Image: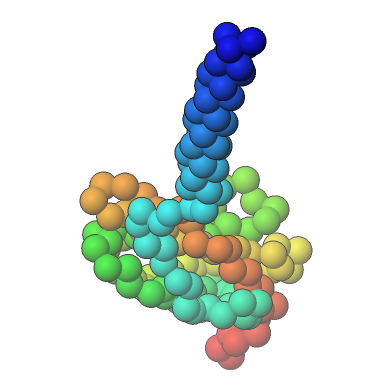
Length: 154
């Protein structure tokens, strides 16, 4: 009988230790899962300033003498040495602007015009580089283009 009681106590002691180890393992797993769920920001992300959401941007003229001028600006990110501006129409295969620059603003000047069927659904975004590492892209912002001949001379 003594041996059975001893084994019962020994088993209870071992079970207690196992439960403690399982509890500790769950805590470690729980903490590591929280780290995976809560993203940490290694580098800042630019805040888009201009154009505002759903703004109407300049368009050109049929004679191509009045340029299309688009101005983009975003907030400076501390430590960033380079910014990447990306502008594309939803229907296009390639972006019209895909530049890396050190400034927090960019003015695009092109001669030509955008046909009415491509005047809607333009998107732009920016990311930055800090210590050689690119940030995630900012959220996209949309804009439209005014109809052709809106502000042409003559």
